[in-house]
Image 1 (cartoon, each protein chain N blue to C red):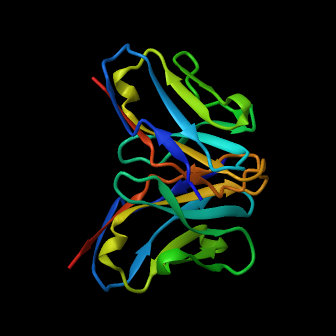
Image 2 (spheres, rainbow over the protein chains, first blue to last red; image 1 turned 45 degrees about the horizontal axis):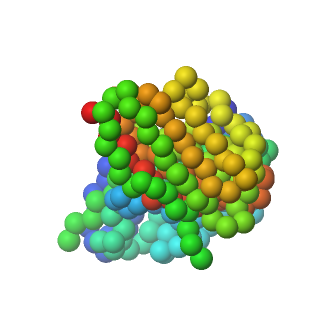
Length: 114
Length: 115
């Protein structure tokens, strides 16, 4: 079964600074990987996904993530953080067999300070 | 296009009382999911429907939880009786197609508080 680890529970960055949120996964084959964002009181919104091909994927809101098979990682990055990026970020892994559910990490809460 | 709609957004009940949550998925989405999100945790799958059929309910506590998706469209999740530990956010999501590619669209959730 697949699993996801997000090592950072809470990260604080200054507005305009760069951001990297870590995600490590465990799965025996090539996984499907996702990053979702959840603003307070809201549902989860898909930021980006990786299924195959180019290991650097671009998402919405200026986010990108890089799949590194050798490190079993799928870290989320943004070059310049905006105050509106403050939210909870969840990494998720799915099996490419297509019939198993997504497994989510516990999330990383991002705070943005002026 | 309307997103996934859930109701109620908030519900406060006494323990041992019943509660029900309703979800209307995005039009045309065959697959519907109910997730449980405890405070400070990621969502955990309770049940997944493909059309009317519950294809994965292994994590649904069947002694007190039940769900249905009549006519393969909207769905109801029920808890009876509720316990203090059921306080959480119940998220509904939907996706297009019957193969789970993980491209889920989530509702805003129903926050349950059990007193």
